[in-house]
Image: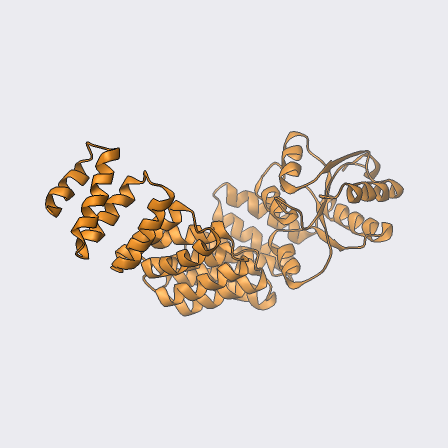
Amino acid sequence: MVPYEEMSILIVDDIESMCKSIRGMLKVMRFGKKYRFAHNGAEALKMIREIPVDLIISDWNMPGMTGVEMLEEIREDPALRDIPVVMVTAEANREIVAEAAESEIDAYILKPLTVKVLSDRVVAVLEKANNPPPMVRHLKKARLLKEDGELEAAIAETKLAQKADPRSSRPLRELGYLYYEKKETDTAENWLIKAAKMNNLDVFAFHLLGEIYLQRNDIAKAADCFEQAMNISPRHISRGVYFGKALIQKGMMARAEKVLDKVIELSGYSQPLVEEIISHCMEHRAYHYAVKLLNELIKFEPDRVDLLSLLGLAYEQIEEWLNALKFFLLAIENDKKNLPIKLHAAKIYSRIGQPFRAEMMLRGVLKLDPQNNEAIELLKQNG
């Protein structure tokens, strides 16, 4: 145990004055000997991977990698995962409570900070880290056993954790996860249901139940669980994306669209996310939904050749030839050397009975690429 006054502490906040203010409070408390600052989660991770620290005090919301995203990385890294982390946040809401359970935040503090509140929280966190209660000790041992592939021993240890603190949902959730890993999904389901009943903000339990029901093809129950998880913690929209994609692959488009529309709304209409969903739709022949999303996306970037071309291809797949041609021509207008799209446009001109326009398009291709075999063959057929 490192004496409080000898600790190395990392303070993470995008506002320099806040970092200095927290450092000032820690000095008043006589906590820490070495202090370092980071201004986002990615910077903090780089620093602690180079030089370990005894405590992290981090802001919740920061540009780039947030405090919670940083914490998830820390908890997944065996070399870092036992570092105590205290989060500072401007407001307490159900999402923060859910994140605290899921990402194993040691404590969170509401702004504005005071020396007394910071002191009380830090002391409690450090005491727990240095003298973990029986439940935590059993869960840590179970985690090590699980990583060594000893699932039965990990289950036994987790049951000891559950007996040590019957009021906590964490051991119940962990038992559900371990039985899920053993592919004993009926037993996993029972433990996860218990965890969710005990803590209706346990996002992980709802997500894993959704996985189980999806495997059983019980789409109604799976949808309820994934929706519950998203409602608790909208930041984890990846759950909804996963579920929506799975529904597309199962050909359940009405349900998939409902799920993915909600996911996109929760994301604040994230363009990279929409493009990811479009790509999945095109891959799995969900062309009507791809058309819908592409039309919305093009409103914001009307000159993007790749989007215009993709929308033309999607319309082509559902045999809306005039719409396909419209977007192919827009793509060509923005990229006159786009030979593959010119070939698509030529084929549509032929299909809709406009051989002269098809020939003009093909001759344009051959002007740029005289040896283009596809254009040569199409020109013969058109003649």
